[in-house]
Length: 257
Image (cartoon, rainbow, N blue to C red; front, top):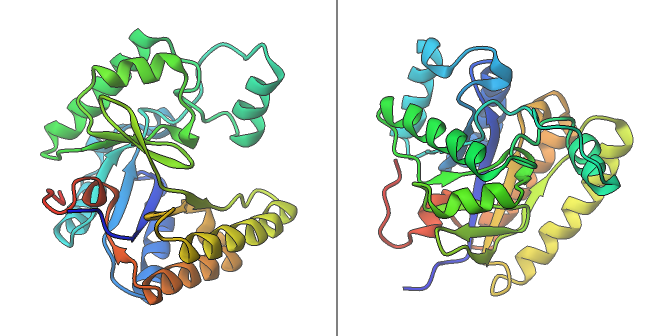
């Protein structure tokens, strides 16, 4: 059976330290419709303590899983700890496009593989079965792509596509995302995201999966929150089925947990 035209709400940077903001965003979306969400959970966000040490956070994630949410591994520490880039493009992507959080942008295969396995094993120890891995800021170098071929995950994603593993077949799936670090970034985000939203909704055959990529920092900006509510409302009005990313990848038979 062909995968349906769908919308997937994806919440990035989920951790005990961002959870209050995450809850505000999730409540705002629930006010539109209680759809399943893909939660990108960071095992040890900025090395401030592993999620295993926060039972209230784990209980909150279990409640979300019980209502149909999917948990994915989102890096290991969400920090770019690799040597400084030598190229102008590398510097731009690692320090402007993302503010020093592209953890997997420049890792060698062995280190990328080690971090992938550690994230997977830590989630499995909690009873979770993550099908997906998403690199912070979607930045992955050759070492990471090579390690993913040998890893335990069924899919990863970039800004524009879902990548099936281990064969690395790409399926068109654009992600809307806001940059809220300054007023001009928010204004530009509103314009560009509205344009991409309208294009994706008008061409479901070309864009069968539309991703709404929220970040906890969005919760502090009413214009961003309003846009996400609008985008979800419009996607549902256009008949897109609300699915997690893992649900869409494995359609029609998949494990939501």
